[in-house]
Image 1: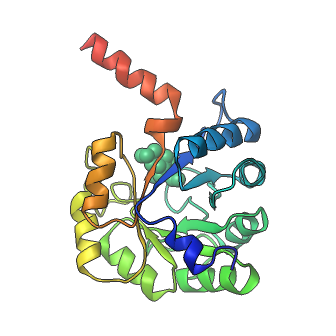
Image 2: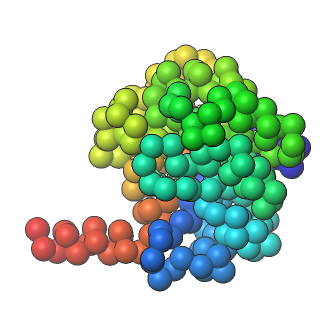
Length: 228
Ligand SMILES: CC(=O)N[C@H](C=O)[C@@H](O)[C@H](O)[C@H](O)COP(=O)(O)O
């Protein structure tokens, strides 16, 4: 494994920073995303999360902390590392943890989540983070062999309301189900207080993306407040 048990345990209680620029945006270059990730590491990030094989490669060279990699293909349905092909490409690029769609929806290559996770485990040394959208997803992903569970897709799959901040209720439900896997709170965590509340709800670690690494969104929040 690229990440042994002690190294995984070192992420407990920590902040994971997701650095992603979207198609057509000025910061969408692998060098820039690696620089943003390295800046987050200086600030205390215990791990980083980046999208795309080039970003993963550049970021691996730019930071010491573990890299969670994903490969987005499209923007609706199953689009976060949707197939075995995408998952192996993420692992090949050097991700310590492959983040992939961990929902119960049909995957574009017709493979099951269990088959996809098994392929990553058999053909790489990476762990698998299942990006889930509900408690039932989390239970199914644990059953399918995921190493970590994320709430990344809560509010984006129709099963959960899109809460203003983190979906604390979902975190509590997953914790109460005693899956026994590290639970990563991710999605719409916009303030330090919200990050704290996700941890207090029982998350193992907390991912923050937009509020730290997406200047266009952050600028928009301030602009909207000034115009209100
Ligand atoms: C739903 C989806 O596509 N989530 C993506 C997953 O990698 C990213 O666009 C998010 O920025 C990331 O999950 C972090 O969340 P937030 O940016 O809300 O802190």
